[in-house]
Image 1 (cartoon, rainbow, N blue to C red):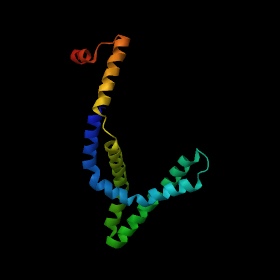
Image 2 (cartoon, one colour; image 1 turned 135 degrees about the vertical axis):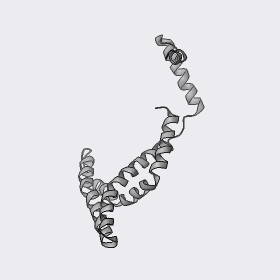
Image 3 (cartoon, rainbow, N blue to C red; image 1 turned 30 degrees about the horizontal axis):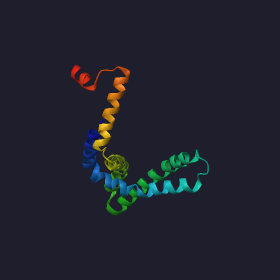
Image 4 (cartoon, rainbow, N blue to C red; image 1 turned 180 degrees about the horizontal axis):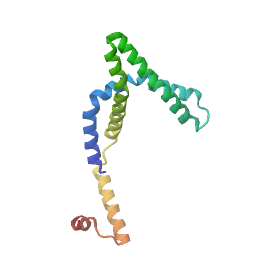
Length: 141
């Protein structure tokens, strides 16, 4: 995907996911931190961090969502508790999409000089391999 199209898609994802993605980031911050802490604390060999991360996340996230649901039910009724239990994982997914969009938008744009260097390199490769020029490929399709 071209850089401009990727950035446009990232802006769209950002606008779409910002409100609920921020809620998801807040709702899932505690289990995320617990998972990182357990992984850093107990992993000793290079293959252990993924195991600790997976096992801790499988326990910490659902337990925290359930605790939030119980708290919501106690404070605002059972319907609110059920909604919190259902929406916490979904907003967590939106938070991940928001994070991915922000990561794309933080990447520096390629400079005009870099783009021209890439085009020159592509032309040189086509010249050496005997492939048709890019303009003739586009005009043929």
